[in-house]
Length: 434
Ligand code: UDX
Image 1 (cartoon, rainbow, N blue to C red):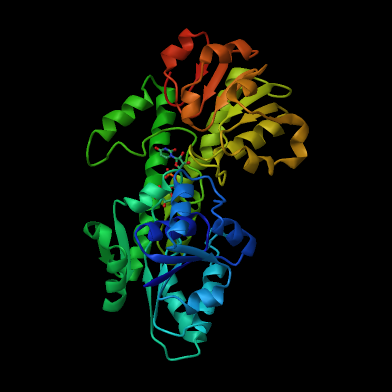
Image 2 (image 1 turned 30 degrees about the vertical axis):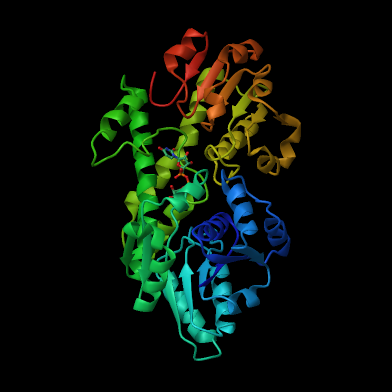
């Protein structure tokens, strides 16, 4: 079976490498030739633990290749995974133009039976649109099938998520398509969930929005904790011990960012509203999340009063640890607000500094990009924790205190034990606890 993976972004690249690792012959395709040339040499354009090694080993074994010749890749393939981007449009809905483009290309090159599997996160009914597009533009009578196989990988653990998934959702409408996908995922056949296509598409959206809701829920409880003597860590622990609730995704903090949750939540709201369903539950989830930065800024102001000309260290720029991705990162909103208030910033992140440098070009005079947390802390009036990188947990806080102008930490992710930090002489503000 010859497999093609269209799109070499996060999902596409991990899918191509992962399928090759499962033993299949895979060609990763992208219209950006420069990107393809680099990946074909083993250069991974994103920071993702473990991806480099697997890319190199599968390239060496000859199971994996990359191409920017899209027509040829389609002509040579039996199964095509569509992993191109579906960025958020102005009205919150996903922009599907890249999916349409690939569908038309497949139609024009339909020289043999092909199974087209959509893997990008897409609105319900996208597969039907792919089917209609291929049917409209194909030039032969050749048969094809469509399927939905949504991806659940998390940045930072994408490779292991792909190779050890909790479940593999397969949405199909023919026996032939089902058999092909069951064969591709033979090694994980105990975790297959086979449904119709609409159901598979909705499972992906429903999962992401549910997790987003869980995070907003715990953040709402953190707001309550801050007005009372309750402690959010203990509230989360107490709730999470109930197996019906579960302890994961109950970490209060600056809210969710990244390329999936914010976009998918808005997209599901739009899908529901277009279908005439009241989506207020998810709208509130989005609103609570949008308020997280406001709540955090209030804490900074409570500690520093006037922000103009204050020096502030920001530790953590990526939307979560173990990635260089800053898409929808809370750090961006925090930094923007602090700059608007006239503060001077010293920024540090183990991986995301280069990406952040491209933003805020007009503020270069007031931003210093630092090479270590200690350098960032030098002479500052307060230090902010925005992302819970392990490196920050292990900081020598005595050393940090020595270099700071004022020993004030405002921790947006509750990474430190409050008692310990206060004992070291810091003024310490965190989320949903004293
Ligand atoms: C998510 C889904 O987990 C994954 O299944 C899907 O395929 C893509 O979207 P990802 O965006 O990589 O993955 O990150 P995830 O680990 O889910 O975290 C998302 C955001 O929620 C991050 O900003 C994180 O900081 C935040 N978060 C997560 C919390 O604020 N609290 C939590 O308890 C968990």
